[in-house]
Length: 406
Image 1: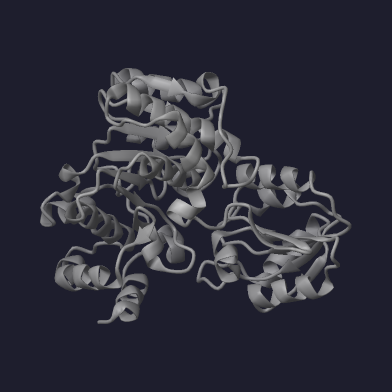
Image 2: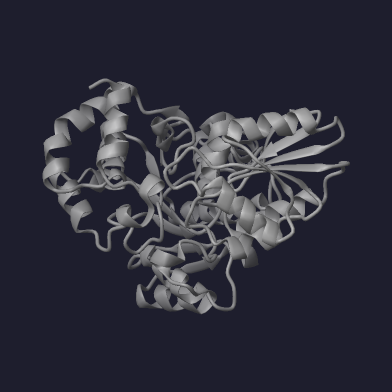
């Protein structure tokens, strides 16, 4: 199979949460352990940094990678989901894994995948570990897919665990309270391994402290420790919290003697995260007349920060291109959207995309006015046609919406 055929096989034949939702979720790590054993336990050869959280995992992972690259290290980066190309998930020093390596890995292990019902995410984790091992990376930054305790990445024993924050997302899998979700994400805390917490609430802090005590793990609350930060080329008000988390993580790794990173490495790394890693879709400016921003925020916590930031912008009319997936809690996010905006509703080109008519109807119940379109691209085209130079266009609601635009 060529690269296109290989990735289509991965997407279509095997369970994949990104497109299927609940049916792809597995409730234990049995398959992952079988797969990793089959591959010869490549994760045992890696020095890992493990990152979980409701929001900010991707930004935090990429900023840490950029800093370590500036310090001269060879850095593997495993994240999800991808926006345009599957290979975005697996990079070394900003360079995507080769198409040939993906094809060869799948071809070699396809019988095992089929015989053991290995999911899309599980095989992706195995692929990343095997690639990083063969390429002899100095560090592998591993982002959790969803949750933590039962995530396929949670077979590693990292140098440090990082939890960015907790919000009410994926409640059908992780629980419907902050405490329950924090418990799932705290599942990445390992015995005698330090953990950095980016943000916390009165409900989540006791959960993290208790889990750290149980594991004899030193715990660091970045928001309480880090006061001075550096600017980043990842824009958006929410990055302030992520930067503190990143700097605290680097500080702990320095203290452990695991890395040798200077303040200049931190400053330059943060300023060049996009250049060094290729991260897209975080308060990304697509045009300046009218100013056009896309962002992958897709839950209550993320969208709250985004729309608060939009309020700080100067514009005449706000145009919002908006789409969501079908398991999104609309009652939680639609009240966040400004009633004064002109909306362009559409369905992301994804099996989990919410039908445009349903989204339009629900939005109207919250006083949001606009039109429906057959595609995100059509919606964006109409927004550009209607917007005047001093207007503002925002595109978001889902990672898949952003993926169709950039």
